[in-house]
Image (cartoon, rainbow, N blue to C red; front, top):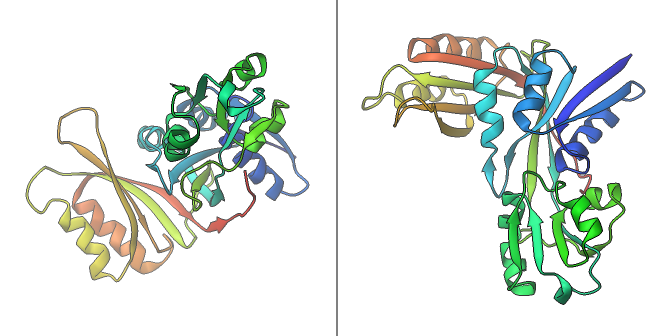
Length: 280
């Protein structure tokens, strides 16, 4: 049986590495990795059933929530979280330059640039920093330009057969990204449940009421994050993770009560979280 997995491209991205890691966990099944230009397009491909699954970043321990993933999931009705895992992130400076002093410009995704800010200030204080749509996007250009460097992963360097000048260069050693595997199968059992809701109205205590439900039922909330609805100023969507399985009666009670205090409620599914120490 063949399984297709969507991820953010191009080749050499952290997301491709995560998708490959998930594919390895499937054992003997034949897997096909499909790269898409944006996170939104990879999610939409799975929603259309062009692929069986998609692997997308949801949160980084340094940079916080991945807004493109959150915003797109709110708009899609069909996808459920099948699995979650964390991967350690180690950034590398990739270049064909002979020395650091030969590098004039460094390219990378904004999050990677920010996560290596102190290292860049110390070792390359005068270079031009250019933002790209992914950590892998500049690698073909770096292959042809010895005055250019890119912050990417050792996976990207391997894919494009490029030398690594320095590794790791991230400012914080404990840098992890959490990924979600999404598909169409209903997911009601696991150690975590993720959901999102929009409040009935914007008034004092409007957010407190739904959150108190979890406290009253002794359900721990491990994460909350807000995103603007993009419709009205001050109008927000709240993304929440709880440490409970959706098939437990207490959780079901909480979710039923939550419907009374929200204008819209979406349950993304229950899942287990695995820490994978496969270094990028």
